[in-house]
Length: 327
View 1 (cartoon, rainbow, N blue to C red):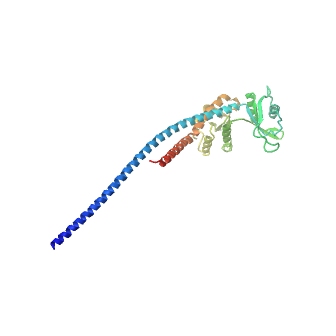
View 2: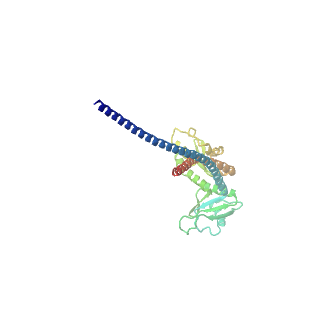
View 3: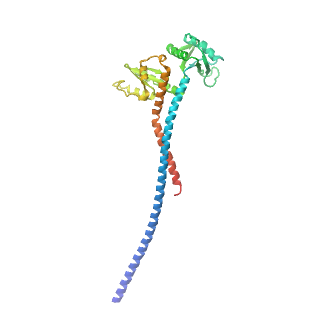
């Protein structure tokens, strides 16, 4: 009986030893699988590190290129400002005439203007008016269809062009029979857009009872309570006028325009001196420099955002391409 109990106990022990052996064998298999998985993870991490190192180098290259692009963009702004100034200077002798009916000028427009303009403004010229060239703008239209096209005329003498414009401003509306004729200076597109932006502020200036004037090529002076300011950027002026709605604010307490939007000469012009008595070359050169500074300041935020967006776009493109490449 005792022998039977001892045999059963040995069998149990052997079974338990066998079960432990099977468990150890399973643990060995699991350890081998874990080791293989760890080795795979190490390989993947090494690949990721290689990719990150490559992306770092590419980002460094992109940043260097962004700095180069920024420098080129600033150079482009400077060249754009000089080009606008050159175009404005080339148009100094030009005048625009609006309201002359199609066909009344005949084939020889300079001769027609030479005879018509002194009668229009009731002024004699010595020597007589001389034109280098004159022509209609825009595509040709049928007589009586739509508004008459403006005439642009390039005068031989700058002094006579200034005299014509100054006299036209002084006399007010000019009439050729029943037709109202308007004379204006000729500017580049950029300068003309800035002048239109300033002109859109005239109703607000009248409402605020502010004395103002638009100087060539495109700068506005305002005078209120004997204090004068000159603006070269319409947006600066719009923000300045928003503060004038507060009766507690004065010209002295209002925020100053940016330094690039005014100069000593511009403030001296605020007294309302006639445009014709100013030194045109010096004034135009000063405007050109200020216009370049304005363009640089206005586009700085857009330039920075553009650099960031370009860098992000290129980084995303490189990352997507690397994800598609095999490790």
